[in-house]
Length: 189
Image (tube, rainbow, N blue to C red; front, side, top):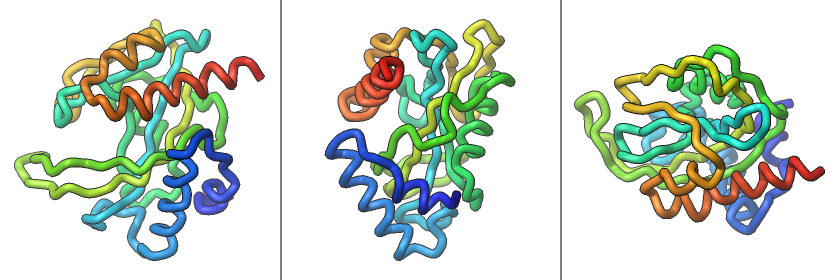
């Protein structure tokens, strides 16, 4: 199933997801290069909420640009299978080798603001990430390694600790809390 169809069929969890879903679909209709970061205004990204088998811990990285603990993920860079992107980024950013989807379906949708910053010596203007999040599972006993050009720490946190570890208030309140609520809800189905 193509990404657009997956997003169309996705059932929003809350008002934020409902509005962001419509915004993402509108951008897909208007931007021919939305899968490429060369679109300096808005482009697609994939994130991973990585949990252990028991669903009690979350894997996070300390993101160098944002100086905060955060989920893992990255740019589509032309790839239209965003689950594939999320899996690749999870491995690259944490050093884990055994990671799998808990479900192949989209776990969450977000439109994320990215403030201007310097990356690899070049200034990147403020822009939007049209983000698709996937729920992944990894072995918390596997060795972790940092990716020095992107992060300076990789660690497992309890669900509550993961939210508190982020220094980005908007992410704590609107994204990470939401992801944990959705995770708990899926466990009770």
